Image 1 (cartoon, rainbow, N blue to C red):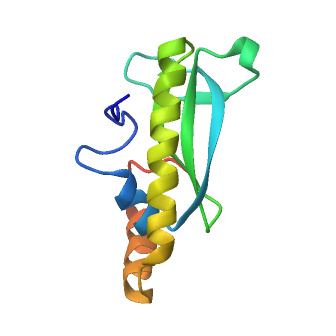
Image 2 (cartoon, rainbow, N blue to C red):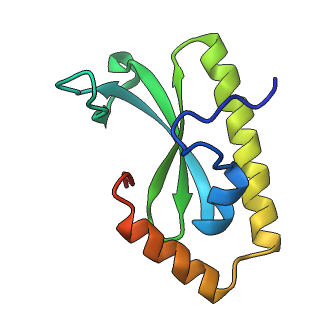
Length: 121
């Protein structure tokens, strides 16, 4: 399967960007449901698989953050997407560990994360 378009990242952002800039150390799959009160609201909560409407793959960082990477439906096609994105994220994390960002790059990424109004931690 080819890599799907990552629907939780900014346009043009890649798994390599996330793994390197955010110092990703792992990933997590969480079952979620919407708790939005309007069509423009994207509020969600983690829930039991039996109550879930979709699943989200997160990158986990050294700072303890979970960064949403990709939402998928609870179907066999969604499972295929999770597998493709998880594989891509795994490769990006391993490669980033071989060439870690220097202190200045890491500080810049941390400051950007603190001031980004669209960031959901």
